[in-house]
Image (cartoon, rainbow, N blue to C red; front, side):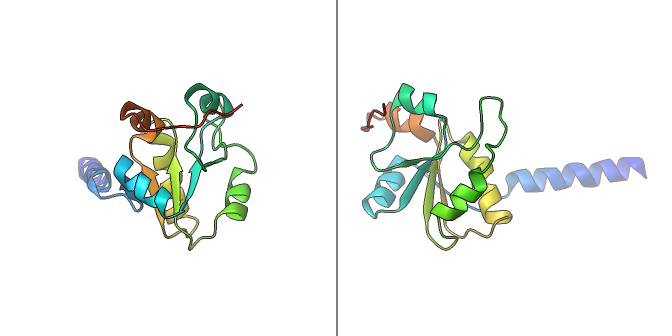
Length: 136
């Protein structure tokens, strides 16, 4: 019985891991199209990261997690106040990992419907030589 339970749990995890995400991953070309369409871009990194790499022109900085990986108090309230649940929104971080977590939460738990994750984050954007704006 115990082994059967382990097999069921393991199989469930594999199916979940292989299923497509509930949000839309975009590459740099997709990101550029969304920016050209004036879709809101939220950069969820920390201020020191913005200073280190620069930011996308027109993006809004809104720190999701602190340096210890804890969600910043008030972040979800601020996000809700800035982005309508039916409005398309692009999320960008350093490499796409934090935005993966947030995008899933926004779709699955908070009712957002059009969330885009920049798959390779700002680092992928920079690797391809795209421009950024330096923040102070």
